[in-house]
Length: 551
Image (tube, rainbow, N blue to C red):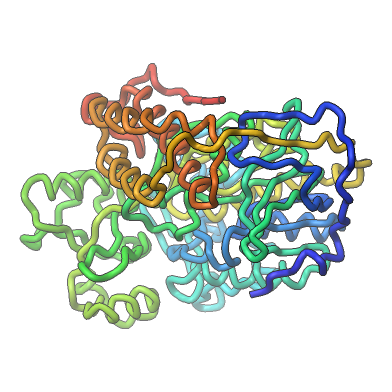
């Protein structure tokens, strides 16, 4: 992987620090102390935070229009949810399917909270974006000269494209990585952690970032900032997400004054490998799409008793069914593929097979122990249909964004499509922006005191994970949510102090985003989609609305 030193950036112009800046704004919505006149400052057209499908696809479209693009990524370009995606990407690519069917499937999964306009955009523009991926070199699986399509939960027909059997995300990431690194208008800076958005008078002027190689702060001035930072699964003890998914983009946007929406709606994937000594590994929903059964420890197939779609019910229903079986006394829940054709299983799921074999499980014969784990965030930074946030010149796409397309429960394999469609719309919206004359640079600074007492940030992070898993997971109640919020209240004073290290800054982001999730979950006194309140177990028409929060 390439890390491009700042001294080698041909597309970035270095702006010398200004000796005197009148009216330098000092704001307490930053997390670290800094003064931009003391830091190196680089000017580019777009700064894109994140290198998954949303970030790199947006970067490629902008770069090919002639704009200068700088992509900052927290670790390497392989550390993304995109790379880990197994099942595939949902799009209407077959004559037996239609955008109208895809539209209604998405609405049903979203439990009454999908934005219908956003869904129309997704299902109608999605096929064109997938074809762009194919033109870039993405090799999706083919059968009989046609794209091979599978089915997943809550889809009415087979419309899921996949690659290398069960490594769709890795194939998409491969293509986007190669294309982005070859594009002369794009510079990719790995191990660059975005710290805060630089906002004055509700206009975003750029990003404060930390270079992990030089251990120093830097400023990236731009005409547009695009958040594509992914999700927040690492707020929980068990997650399908990579280590970088800690909700940083949502935290930065909220501190900067952007609106966030639907923070209570987090999707837990029902079938994650649950084996002592093995990492939590996603067992794709496509396994159930090909006919696998869920069984309890007595060997009983239980999903037909919970939903008419059985194993292909929406994910929130499957998760609660698994938890209910455990509550009834089952010592575990298992995924059974033994009745399926073994050649088909090995051809379709080579990655899952290799991983399971490593831990002594043969997926064609053995029942696979599974359990739910944090997977996907339906809520996030509120945007319109063009990725615009409530802060001018700040945009968001992919999992960090929320335009309402997923509602209360994402339809399987709509997430990769979401990143393509709304990332492309951001570029359409900003196509002329980068040709405009750059505005004046206002300068920024933060002067916060050090924490009054030392904080064990490692311990705080681990304790927060445990509390979120126990009380803000698939099952919630007022008592548990108030317990979590009470714990967070004990650290409220940190908001008025500077984070002394990167560990402190990331833990503070976790704390902020966890609070947003818990507060939204406490407010919504009903159950809907991925949000289930044990003390309010039914949906209520009066709650068919969104919770929008702003600092």
